[in-house]
Length: 189
Image 1 (cartoon, rainbow, N blue to C red):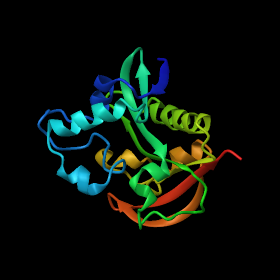
Image 2: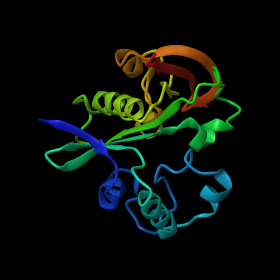
Image 3: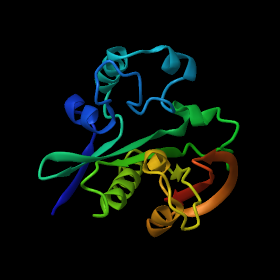
Image 4: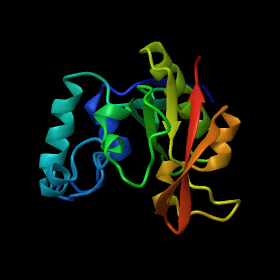
């Protein structure tokens, strides 16, 4: 198995990973931290997919992992200033560095447990560094080995980020699926 991580530029592949199964469903598309909640909550059904298609015209929205040209994983990564984390009251700012945020890792069922999330984290680090980021932040669950509901595991888990060289930078007041989230950072300087 060869996993290749590439910028997410192909709408159909993005839809495979973060689009709903039903076109009329008003879920996901990995927009909740990318755009203001007022806009995110207003959009319904196919309008959400159309919004993502238009965003892709401006460049990649993150990264996709491919196994033999089949999209199998997704990572959302962007400058923190361009996300709602810039104003999030539960996730602190460690300093004034123009860091990038990595907030979502998703691996398709049937492809989990094969190291794809690790490849996506490393790909996101490389993607941000190549674009001048001084550091990448993530806000994973500090589940301390407890089982995490896969639907809510999109934020990632602490041990995966530690394995990728991220270190604990701050506690947060955010929780997800009953687990505290922490701010982890990997710096390039």
